[in-house]
Image (cartoon, rainbow, N blue to C red):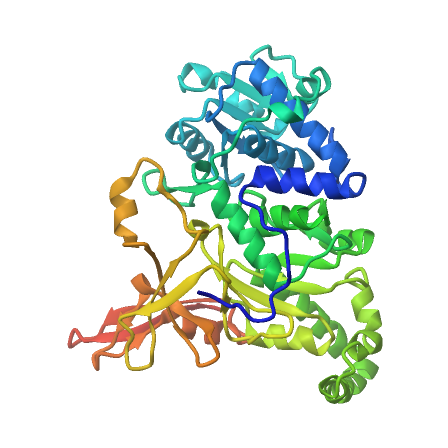
Length: 501
């Protein structure tokens, strides 16, 4: 099994429904969700959240939406997205989160392919779905999150919640945690999108594992900036905080993140490497352009590194408190996912007193497989396997690198209506990630790249283009690069690159 050392004790849950009921019972009037944009439902305590879920679930039953029906969900990040997701989990529906950046045709294709009977959306998507019931025969209900619409075919989520009493808590549907609870369509063109089927047990096991490795507590505040339809944000940025009784604050937009950080003063921020790259470049630029700071800060970092290694863990936060204030003054940890962060950025942020961690996973694994810990990390590694996850390297080469296989309670049920593709990605109980990597002597997983991208040189050596691209992209003179295999005049395989400066 995965990492088992010095785990935090956390409550065991077997479903998202159970998690929500337990958390509300424990934290009641504590703030759960806050929308920094003005929306019809802007701020909810845990009691309020459950009340909205019970009212909305009751209204869905009253309009005739049967248990196990599929519900498509698309909107900007907001409280109502969370309410809809949790209602689906609590009332035994199957939720289908949709990428809000897809084209109209791609969105409608997912609604069709997922067999959704209801679509819940913000007013930004009203024109796409108006009249769609005539072409998508399975769609019976259209529900808009915003103010009541003049179109009779569209229900108002606000009205549905306000006009219905809360469903009887003791009559909630019993959940089979092993059944499909969510279908996430991975990005791709019309014929390539795959519907990943996750169960409530998949999601719940990932919550328990992650929080047992990375302690979160009720006083933590999360600033949500990543799209909620991404499994990374949905599981780690929404379900994890709710499991711990923390509060989630939805940023207005990526452009307002700096202002929102100061307004909320979050303790945890989930982001992608690009976000942290930009943050670190901005910090470095402000120091380099200041004649005094550019002379003082380098020796200060050396001194604080020595003091930290001697056990004075808070000294960096005190010395660089002005910098911490830019991010609200309360950041406990930055967490990166979605791609491998630059180790130099991680090291640089840590030198200023920020904890910085990365994890690794896929949509198919709910999503986390491996995670670094605050006091047990490597900046060049994806992390340690979660406690209930097993990871192995298959067919390793002379360096120990091979395809990463994983198994555990967080691994998907399969691809929706695609048993052939499902069979291709499983070897017995083992899920084939398609990633190439190795496990070092300390148990840390390292990622080299994608198996399908490997270039085999004339000498038979495996070359990972991602590693070369990473090195190229660190140059301040290179904006973007792509590395690929090509043929020379003798038809031998060579390494080529296209570079944008």
